[in-house]
Length: 266
Image 1 (spheres, helix red, strand yellow):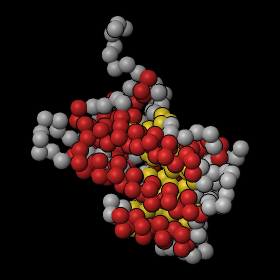
Image 2: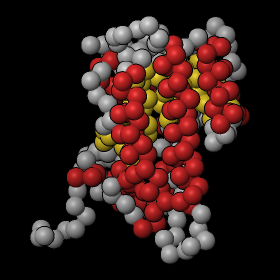
Image 3: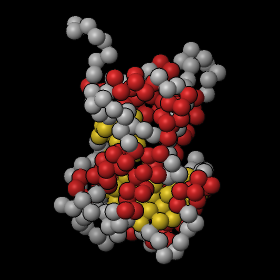
Image 4: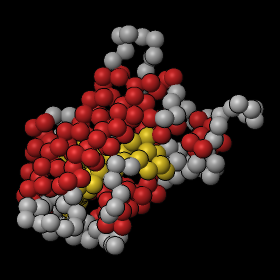
């Protein structure tokens, strides 16, 4: 059993900032070849610099909601590194929604962004993983890690759309895990909370009082850095978790353990 990802090739979506950027950098530091994918090309260049053929890092800019863009991302990865071993679906969006407004399209938008983009990307990459492992009967053919949220099971009325999309992503993870297990491809998800994502950082700029509320309702008493989440994703992506598939691993500082009701009664 090995925790090494040296020499592996990973695609990390949502790689221009926040958690996706932290995961990609962590993988690259550990010796993996990494393709950072995101819509924000200027941000990718700012964080990573221009593509360099001698480096183990590449960036790819495009709208991953489009199937053609996903196919082009996969082709660019194969052209650069000849294979793909790990997919991290970290491309996600958080928007508030109005549960009583039938004209609010947040549910449709987040299902497209957070669920369907990850599903289609997983299907594209899984087909390549199966093809490149033809003739092999042992060992892993690939690993897929989806970034989910504790909002899937601990919801908030203003986050209806995000909660629905997160719950759907969890079930997609389980279903794909069963479908891809015969091909030796593992699929897991990481549900996080109280982690300094790009979306949380932006929200705290507008609502600084949210920080103390989050910290008070997180048993470990703090907001974790994106780099801490990267370590957990590393575990799910490496052979150290070789017998783990279809699981939703929680990293939230104990937040989901806390009953928001102060009264010790049921």
